[in-house]
Amino acid sequence: MTDFDFTYMLTGPGWARATVEDRQNAPAMEVSYLSNALGDLVNAIISLFSETSGDPIICEWHDEPGENIWTFRRNDAYVRIHILQSGVYPRGLPIEDFDDDNCDKLLFDDDCSLLHLATQVEDQMRHVLQEYGEAGYKEKWMEDDFPMKELTHLTDLIRGYRREHPAERE
Image 1 (tube, rainbow, N blue to C red):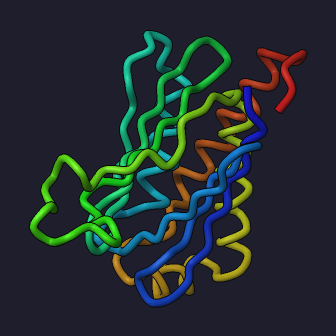
Image 2 (spheres, rainbow, N blue to C red):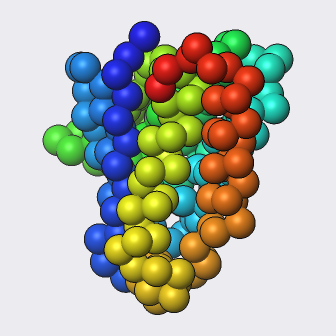
């Protein structure tokens, strides 16, 4: 089990930077407006609350070039988080050796509680909302509105989960 921290900040027009951190790793991901990064992530987390079969829930964040592919697998109160960076040209690799088989990089692979994961995402969404507001987010992100409805839904799910699992800690 890991200590898991998530940060998300808008860095420029249509760009954000996210970091996931455990005791051993703190990979950062640059993400562009080519995907609805924050909205897609919160929807994946919302889906985890009803997913109990262990089937994967996938969230893709596009970068230029490449993408970060998040795979979540719920196992009772815990979630396996697997993040693969795909389609990025590895530095130092001779161009003649470049192909799709050598451009994937495992960024993160660890477990954390569903409650902790959800509250980390909720906290970062609230931070972004407080810093920019809905209109400011839309202006800075350029493509998508701030996922306010999804934030409200996530908050409700967290409250309900805490009521149903009072002994569980984040």
